[in-house]
Length: 360
Image 1 (tube, rainbow, N blue to C red):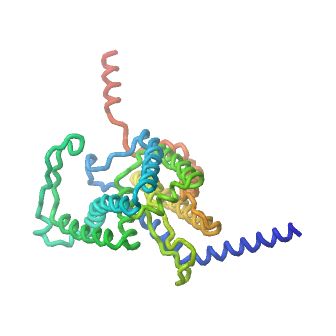
Image 2: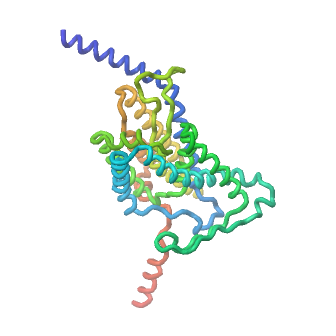
Image 3: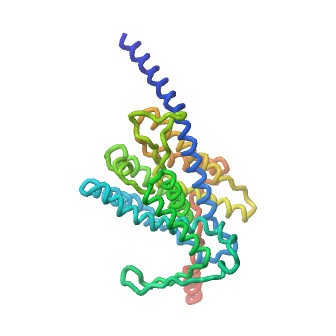
């Protein structure tokens, strides 16, 4: 009798879980679409133009920085958790929101500038203002001397107005716009440098995410208390109905977009380099498929068990299996594993040449 009851209960639980998954489709589809398009946009912007000077490209992450990333993330997470525990939640959020509003102005302006600048009149585009500051030891050393063109100033003013609107209203849609801007900017300006660095970063954060979500209340507590655009919010409406007794929003941390996005951007640049040599790409598409499948798995498990899930638990195996699975099928495992974006500097070659001349 107990076995039959258990079987019946399991069937009812499975049916209930499937029903919850189907009811979650109205917010799951926007979440998947937003995260996928954000990664696509950031990865595309990370591919350098042919005429872009080497010094204008962002500096690649080092192996040591990739190894320290989970430790730094843990320190920041614990600090935020302590702030919410010992100080007023409203005060902490006001201070942090001001910081993110300032970053939001820069991110929104940089995101829109390439598309909007050509639409301005020629006189506005030709105008230039130099933003200067005195030298401040350990803060501004060397001092700030940044040229700003007319479109940047106009777009900066509009971005400031939008960020002020977010600071006053804290509307979830404004939060998401800022979150997308942060994510695209992060993916664009933080190249990994090599596949090895990407693997270190992703798998280090794989264990970081599991520990802080499953073994401590820290991650979930910070995510729910932190009222700033560090996560995307999607109203949990079930076919037009607001769920009762549940958190009104489903959340996806920006780290679950940016960090896999760095690896996806690396794969897009790898495809671009292969295309220059007339070789077939496809690594970005395959890895994007693994990323979306990992997100789908996260949402299904979260919805069925009605519990927070570390998204990187599913995303990291998805993206690495997709990229290396394609490399294995093509017989290119070693090439992908050892690929580096930057060519080794010529200093070592010159030193070797000088040593050989001395020996001669």
